[in-house]
Image 1 (cartoon, rainbow, N blue to C red):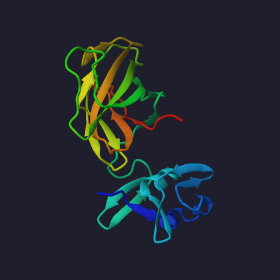
Image 2: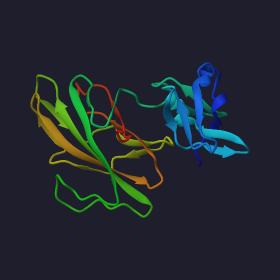
Image 3: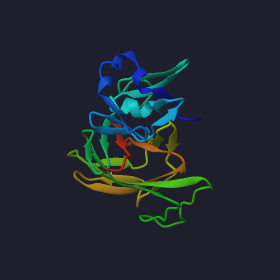
Length: 223
């Protein structure tokens, strides 16, 4: 299904007051700016009108897109069915209280050679890529914690609201007894279509009763 697109000047009454500060980049309409920053590079022209993906426009206003029976609605983050929690970006150390999580790197490759364990490579089917997300998880509590590194939920999302389950977790141990202040490194691999535009990693520490909130990390490469 093609990405839904809307006329920027009619995206909703709730944001009409601020659309006056939107500016189109050049006549050919390749980029959309808001307050001097690029919010979309996927502007298209149709019958003399400029259009941009709903999701790009919503992101400019810190909103989320939710499908409904007769179209789409823009909502505040945390609404709808999206799993929210501690939000961050690549390279940022995030805290949900009992644990610290850092997404160290994100690599999109033709195949993945295991680095932390032995065994065969991760080789996708035709038309797919392997997304390898390297993480570091740290115990921020004063007590030993028994952690399942590849717990639930662990998934990757794309800009079209598709979710991809963990395919393989590369770590010396799936179940780790973590001393206070200790860390564990792991690589999470996912199989995604080559056309998929990556959005977020959704990760929750599987460790009752102190697992804390879900981590939601943007997979957009730092500029």
